[in-house]
Image (cartoon, rainbow, N blue to C red; front, top):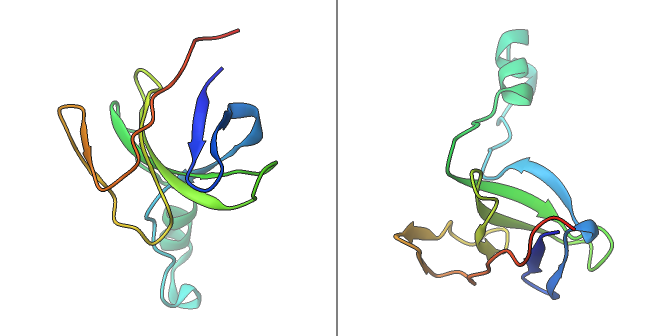
Length: 109
């Protein structure tokens, strides 16, 4: 089990959260003007990197607020959590600037 830190409630078990996809994806200014191909790219095409990835999460059984997390997709370690509207933290060699650092506790139960 993962221990994920909500910026408002603190650390909670992963079962309290739901994944919301890639963070920082801007909604199109005028979606009615998009072609079917452009709209499908907006809806379905997302980055799938090996390594650090900014994601959206919602604390669905807690405060019900959305937040962002930077997670390593290889190790599942959550390197930082930050509130919506806050700048994505710069992560360099394990150091996180401007965000609450949180690490994953334990493994699979």
